[in-house]
Image (tube, rainbow, N blue to C red):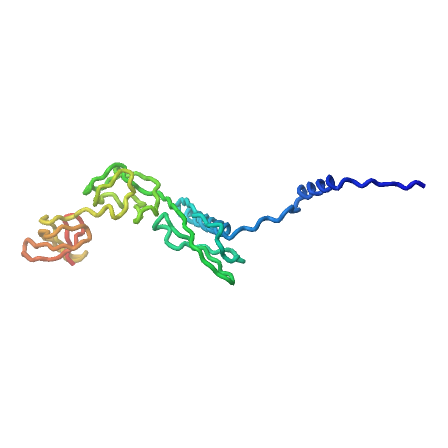
Length: 246
């Protein structure tokens, strides 16, 4: 009886087929994914933190743009076994340039500061044309425009009603966001003005004429001379040309 012979197959094609099958079958990994470096984890944690911050600000009607500083890949820090903590090291509403504190709270804790640029944009009001010092603001001088909240030291006005009638303390260029330190209440009484002096309560009061010895704005106290008695008294300006004495 003649023995049957089975020829040995070339092993290389079989290996290729097995490799191809392993690549096509779901759930079969051909190689382990490279582990994230500490620098990459820091960047991802910072990005996730700022993305959450942007969503919180969006709920307030604000729009946030941010950029994270680079982290040196050669950074040598202990592997953190849990999620990294991230927080602002300063107030992000005071400046567009801020710092993030990234930390690990493991058995071998560490902290690192990471620079970032955060721009918080809100609906504000700007000068529609140049406004001269001493001019009183009127609606036609203003226009609504997006402004960067943390690009200036003081927040701008959100409601134009708070600006109407205010007096510019300096020259304001067109397109400039108007902030409280640029305007003030106009003088309601000037030195030498004749004013109405009222004294008493809501139920009973008397009025007389007087002369202002100092200029002032509504709410301020100034000295006035009672024209009838010649006495010098102090009163609070309640409106232009009127002073009340308690």
